[in-house]
Image (cartoon, rainbow, N blue to C red):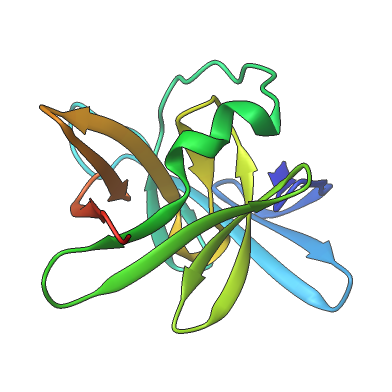
Length: 138
């Protein structure tokens, strides 16, 4: 399994539960069918929907258009690049992001970040559920 950019060897605990070790961190992975249409992996207690997304190599130049502050009137997040690395910002903390495509990033405990356009607005969606609009800060 790939976890935060690192390959982990999973050990079977039982038929549908596995454990991997990343330094001092233990990662539990279970596989369950939670409904009839979709498959989920349960990673450290959080359900993660199985998706078939082809990872494509991208360069940091392709991420520049996503940089900035995103908000929904209550919450405020940032996305920046430093060199060839991308970071999600929440309350001043920088969390490394791993590119899946030029518009889709894995941000650790925050899950998937997806960048899209809705009309003239740049949108950042977290985990396919929470939508934040790019703030034009001059």
